[in-house]
Image (cartoon, rainbow, N blue to C red; front, side, top):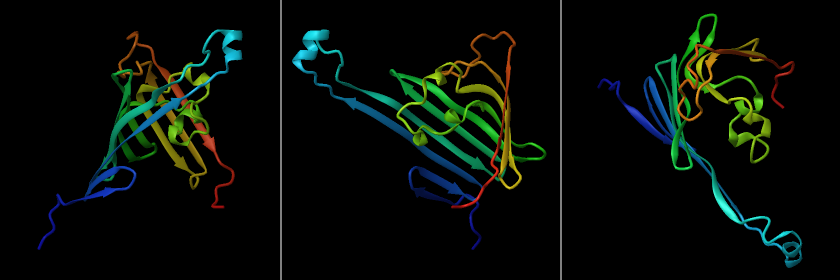
Length: 194
């Protein structure tokens, strides 16, 4: 019997993955919920007004995403953010892998290659929040990003052309024909297993 080209398998590890012969879909998300309780002494309350610190809770991060690949050279991702009861856009791109002389190209809303601190996932940062200076430069913008690794993964480059987009919609904020060029080159003199 001939195998059907539309056969697929369903896997569940950290996320749900649907995989067929030449296509894959990875569905996942994250919820980070903070809760704090403060109790202050009567002396502190009488000295500095009652209850300087308040108990409470908040959702630090809530988002859902769908990412995957088609055939051998196409990748995609759509990631939605939920903040203050509104839906925002995080990543929304389609990408092409194995492009001659370039490596990979992503088109859409992507992370700008400015700082390593924001290129890493919030799952892998040292503290609960990134440093305060990340608020002064956008993390994601809409545009075209090219990237590749070379010299046996000891060096890499990222180069992109972006418009200053709204972080919740991905739309150009000013629409004044301006754009920015962002580049990053990394090198690792030693690359071996420990």
